[in-house]
Length: 262
Image 1 (cartoon, rainbow, N blue to C red):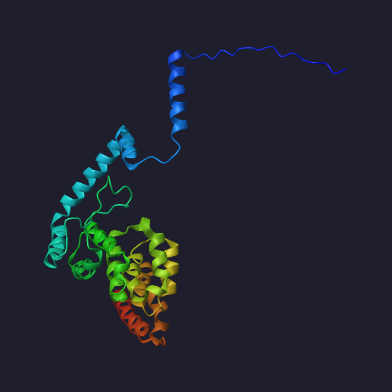
Image 2 (cartoon, one colour):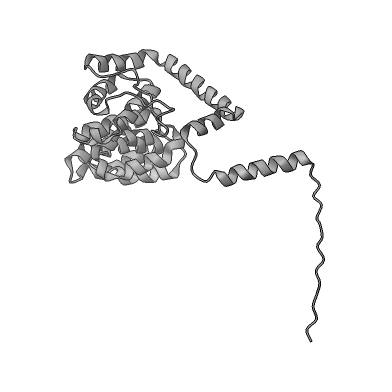
Protein backbone atom coordinates (compact mmCIF):
# COMPACT_ATOMS: atom_id res chain seq x y z
CA UNK A 1 0.00 0.00 0.00
CA UNK A 2 1.50 3.33 -1.06
CA UNK A 3 2.44 5.68 1.70
CA UNK A 4 0.83 9.11 1.63
CA UNK A 5 2.84 12.17 2.61
CA UNK A 6 1.17 15.11 4.25
CA UNK A 7 2.61 18.51 3.42
CA UNK A 8 2.02 21.14 6.04
CA UNK A 9 1.55 24.73 4.88
CA UNK A 10 4.38 27.05 5.86
CA UNK A 11 5.12 30.72 5.56
CA UNK A 12 8.27 32.44 4.26
CA UNK A 13 9.29 35.72 5.78
CA UNK A 14 11.00 38.26 3.52
CA UNK A 15 13.02 41.00 5.17
CA UNK A 16 11.42 43.96 3.45
CA UNK A 17 9.44 46.69 5.00
CA UNK A 18 5.94 47.48 3.79
CA UNK A 19 7.10 50.50 1.76
CA UNK A 20 9.54 48.42 -0.31
CA UNK A 21 6.93 45.75 -0.97
CA UNK A 22 4.39 48.34 -2.05
CA UNK A 23 6.92 50.01 -4.40
CA UNK A 24 7.84 46.70 -5.98
CA UNK A 25 4.19 45.76 -6.41
CA UNK A 26 3.39 49.07 -8.14
CA UNK A 27 6.45 48.74 -10.38
CA UNK A 28 5.52 45.20 -11.36
CA UNK A 29 1.97 46.25 -12.14
CA UNK A 30 3.24 49.05 -14.38
CA UNK A 31 5.58 46.65 -16.18
CA UNK A 32 2.69 44.25 -16.78
CA UNK A 33 0.49 47.02 -18.14
CA UNK A 34 3.27 48.44 -20.32
CA UNK A 35 4.01 46.04 -23.15
CA UNK A 36 4.18 48.22 -26.25
CA UNK A 37 6.94 50.66 -27.30
CA UNK A 38 7.07 54.02 -25.60
CA UNK A 39 6.25 57.17 -27.50
CA UNK A 40 8.85 59.75 -28.50
CA UNK A 41 7.46 62.18 -25.93
CA UNK A 42 7.81 59.59 -23.18
CA UNK A 43 11.35 58.79 -24.26
CA UNK A 44 12.26 62.46 -24.23
CA UNK A 45 10.78 62.84 -20.74
CA UNK A 46 12.91 59.93 -19.55
CA UNK A 47 16.04 61.42 -21.10
CA UNK A 48 15.37 64.85 -19.64
CA UNK A 49 15.14 63.23 -16.21
CA UNK A 50 18.56 61.62 -16.70
CA UNK A 51 21.12 64.12 -15.36
CA UNK A 52 24.04 62.41 -17.12
CA UNK A 53 22.24 62.53 -20.48
CA UNK A 54 21.33 66.20 -20.01
CA UNK A 55 24.91 67.08 -19.09
CA UNK A 56 26.30 65.20 -22.13
CA UNK A 57 23.74 66.89 -24.41
CA UNK A 58 24.64 70.33 -23.09
CA UNK A 59 28.33 69.60 -23.62
CA UNK A 60 27.69 68.51 -27.22
CA UNK A 61 25.61 71.61 -27.88
CA UNK A 62 28.30 73.86 -26.41
CA UNK A 63 30.99 72.18 -28.52
CA UNK A 64 28.85 72.58 -31.64
CA UNK A 65 28.26 76.27 -30.94
CA UNK A 66 31.98 76.81 -30.37
CA UNK A 67 32.81 75.00 -33.62
CA UNK A 68 30.28 77.07 -35.53
CA UNK A 69 31.64 80.29 -34.04
CA UNK A 70 35.24 79.33 -34.86
CA UNK A 71 34.33 78.63 -38.48
CA UNK A 72 31.64 81.29 -38.82
CA UNK A 73 33.31 83.07 -41.74
CA UNK A 74 33.47 80.03 -44.00
CA UNK A 75 30.04 78.78 -42.97
CA UNK A 76 28.81 82.25 -43.95
CA UNK A 77 30.60 81.86 -47.31
CA UNK A 78 28.73 78.62 -48.04
CA UNK A 79 25.41 80.00 -46.84
CA UNK A 80 25.91 83.09 -48.97
CA UNK A 81 26.40 80.92 -52.06
CA UNK A 82 23.25 78.96 -51.21
CA UNK A 83 21.30 82.19 -50.67
CA UNK A 84 22.50 83.53 -54.00
CA UNK A 85 21.16 80.39 -55.66
CA UNK A 86 17.78 80.90 -53.98
CA UNK A 87 18.22 77.88 -51.71
CA UNK A 88 17.53 77.60 -47.95
CA UNK A 89 20.80 78.01 -46.09
CA UNK A 90 19.98 78.33 -42.39
CA UNK A 91 20.25 74.60 -41.67
CA UNK A 92 23.39 73.91 -43.71
CA UNK A 93 25.70 71.80 -41.55
CA UNK A 94 22.89 70.63 -39.27
CA UNK A 95 22.33 66.88 -39.46
CA UNK A 96 19.89 64.60 -37.63
CA UNK A 97 19.16 60.89 -37.70
CA UNK A 98 15.54 61.47 -38.72
CA UNK A 99 14.21 59.65 -35.67
CA UNK A 100 11.57 61.31 -33.49
CA UNK A 101 10.87 64.22 -35.86
CA UNK A 102 8.10 65.41 -33.56
CA UNK A 103 10.75 66.20 -30.93
CA UNK A 104 13.94 66.86 -32.90
CA UNK A 105 13.15 69.31 -35.72
CA UNK A 106 14.38 68.15 -39.10
CA UNK A 107 16.70 70.50 -41.01
CA UNK A 108 15.19 72.44 -43.87
CA UNK A 109 17.73 71.94 -46.64
CA UNK A 110 17.45 71.28 -50.37
CA UNK A 111 20.08 68.56 -50.86
CA UNK A 112 19.20 68.12 -54.52
CA UNK A 113 19.49 71.79 -55.42
CA UNK A 114 22.56 72.33 -53.25
CA UNK A 115 24.82 69.83 -55.06
CA UNK A 116 26.17 72.14 -57.83
CA UNK A 117 26.51 75.04 -55.39
CA UNK A 118 28.48 72.99 -52.86
CA UNK A 119 30.73 71.51 -55.55
CA UNK A 120 31.46 75.02 -56.77
CA UNK A 121 32.24 76.47 -53.34
CA UNK A 122 34.23 73.52 -51.96
CA UNK A 123 37.60 74.56 -53.50
CA UNK A 124 37.31 77.92 -51.69
CA UNK A 125 36.88 76.33 -48.26
CA UNK A 126 39.87 75.60 -46.02
CA UNK A 127 38.41 74.82 -42.58
CA UNK A 128 38.07 71.06 -41.86
CA UNK A 129 34.71 71.46 -40.10
CA UNK A 130 33.19 73.27 -43.08
CA UNK A 131 34.65 70.80 -45.56
CA UNK A 132 33.19 67.96 -43.53
CA UNK A 133 29.75 69.62 -43.58
CA UNK A 134 29.95 69.98 -47.37
CA UNK A 135 31.05 66.37 -47.88
CA UNK A 136 28.24 65.08 -45.67
CA UNK A 137 25.76 67.22 -47.60
CA UNK A 138 27.07 65.78 -50.88
CA UNK A 139 26.79 62.18 -49.66
CA UNK A 140 23.33 61.73 -51.13
CA UNK A 141 21.86 60.06 -54.20
CA UNK A 142 21.19 63.54 -55.63
CA UNK A 143 24.90 63.96 -56.36
CA UNK A 144 25.10 60.91 -58.64
CA UNK A 145 23.98 62.58 -61.87
CA UNK A 146 26.90 65.01 -61.64
CA UNK A 147 30.31 64.24 -63.11
CA UNK A 148 31.54 61.38 -60.95
CA UNK A 149 35.30 62.13 -61.25
CA UNK A 150 34.74 65.75 -60.25
CA UNK A 151 32.56 64.82 -57.31
CA UNK A 152 34.89 62.07 -56.11
CA UNK A 153 37.95 64.29 -56.41
CA UNK A 154 36.21 67.06 -54.47
CA UNK A 155 35.24 64.66 -51.70
CA UNK A 156 38.71 63.09 -51.70
CA UNK A 157 40.26 66.53 -51.45
CA UNK A 158 38.08 67.32 -48.44
CA UNK A 159 38.92 63.98 -46.83
CA UNK A 160 42.63 64.65 -47.24
CA UNK A 161 42.16 67.67 -44.98
CA UNK A 162 39.76 66.40 -42.33
CA UNK A 163 41.23 62.92 -41.79
CA UNK A 164 44.05 61.98 -39.40
CA UNK A 165 46.30 58.89 -39.10
CA UNK A 166 43.53 57.39 -36.97
CA UNK A 167 41.46 57.07 -40.18
CA UNK A 168 44.12 55.02 -41.99
CA UNK A 169 41.88 51.95 -42.41
CA UNK A 170 39.18 53.96 -44.18
CA UNK A 171 41.75 55.77 -46.34
CA UNK A 172 43.41 52.51 -47.36
CA UNK A 173 40.06 51.01 -48.33
CA UNK A 174 39.23 54.01 -50.52
CA UNK A 175 42.69 54.10 -52.09
CA UNK A 176 42.55 50.43 -53.09
CA UNK A 177 39.11 50.68 -54.67
CA UNK A 178 39.90 51.30 -58.34
CA UNK A 179 36.24 51.94 -59.11
CA UNK A 180 36.78 55.50 -57.84
CA UNK A 181 39.41 56.17 -60.50
CA UNK A 182 41.24 59.49 -60.30
CA UNK A 183 38.88 60.56 -57.52
CA UNK A 184 41.25 58.70 -55.16
CA UNK A 185 44.10 61.07 -55.94
CA UNK A 186 43.93 63.24 -52.83
CA UNK A 187 43.23 60.22 -50.61
CA UNK A 188 46.46 58.60 -51.87
CA UNK A 189 48.22 61.92 -51.39
CA UNK A 190 47.07 61.94 -47.74
CA UNK A 191 48.25 58.36 -47.24
CA UNK A 192 51.67 59.33 -48.54
CA UNK A 193 52.04 61.71 -45.62
CA UNK A 194 51.24 59.11 -42.94
CA UNK A 195 54.46 57.64 -41.60
CA UNK A 196 55.25 54.55 -39.57
CA UNK A 197 52.58 52.28 -41.03
CA UNK A 198 53.85 49.37 -43.17
CA UNK A 199 50.38 48.83 -44.69
CA UNK A 200 50.50 52.32 -46.15
CA UNK A 201 53.86 51.70 -47.80
CA UNK A 202 52.65 48.35 -49.18
CA UNK A 203 49.58 50.01 -50.68
CA UNK A 204 51.58 52.85 -52.22
CA UNK A 205 53.92 50.32 -53.82
CA UNK A 206 50.93 48.65 -55.46
CA UNK A 207 49.59 51.97 -56.73
CA UNK A 208 52.69 53.42 -58.40
CA UNK A 209 51.68 51.81 -61.70
CA UNK A 210 47.99 52.69 -61.37
CA UNK A 211 47.51 55.40 -64.04
CA UNK A 212 44.78 57.17 -62.05
CA UNK A 213 46.88 57.75 -58.91
CA UNK A 214 50.46 56.97 -59.97
CA UNK A 215 51.65 60.55 -59.46
CA UNK A 216 50.39 60.75 -55.86
CA UNK A 217 51.59 57.21 -55.01
CA UNK A 218 55.08 57.95 -56.36
CA UNK A 219 55.24 61.11 -54.29
CA UNK A 220 54.42 59.11 -51.17
CA UNK A 221 57.06 56.48 -51.98
CA UNK A 222 59.66 59.17 -52.59
CA UNK A 223 58.97 60.71 -49.16
CA UNK A 224 59.04 57.35 -47.40
CA UNK A 225 62.04 55.68 -49.08
CA UNK A 226 64.20 58.69 -49.72
CA UNK A 227 65.46 59.93 -53.10
CA UNK A 228 68.05 57.21 -53.81
CA UNK A 229 65.80 54.19 -53.23
CA UNK A 230 62.87 55.93 -54.87
CA UNK A 231 64.92 56.70 -58.00
CA UNK A 232 65.92 53.06 -58.28
CA UNK A 233 62.29 52.00 -58.02
CA UNK A 234 60.94 54.64 -60.42
CA UNK A 235 63.50 54.21 -63.21
CA UNK A 236 61.79 51.17 -64.83
CA UNK A 237 58.42 52.95 -64.80
CA UNK A 238 59.69 55.57 -67.26
CA UNK A 239 59.09 52.89 -69.90
CA UNK A 240 55.65 51.89 -68.66
CA UNK A 241 52.98 51.23 -71.30
CA UNK A 242 50.66 53.93 -69.90
CA UNK A 243 51.62 57.51 -70.70
CA UNK A 244 50.33 58.85 -67.36
CA UNK A 245 52.56 56.46 -65.44
CA UNK A 246 55.56 57.38 -67.64
CA UNK A 247 55.00 61.10 -67.09
CA UNK A 248 54.66 60.65 -63.34
CA UNK A 249 57.79 58.50 -63.20
CA UNK A 250 59.84 61.05 -65.18
CA UNK A 251 58.69 63.90 -62.94
CA UNK A 252 59.37 62.15 -59.63
CA UNK A 253 62.65 60.73 -60.91
CA UNK A 254 63.74 64.28 -61.74
CA UNK A 255 62.78 65.45 -58.24
CA UNK A 256 64.57 62.51 -56.61
CA UNK A 257 67.79 63.14 -58.54
CA UNK A 258 67.64 66.84 -57.67
CA UNK A 259 67.32 65.95 -53.99
CA UNK A 260 70.29 63.56 -54.26
CA UNK A 261 72.51 66.37 -55.57
CA UNK A 262 71.72 68.49 -52.54
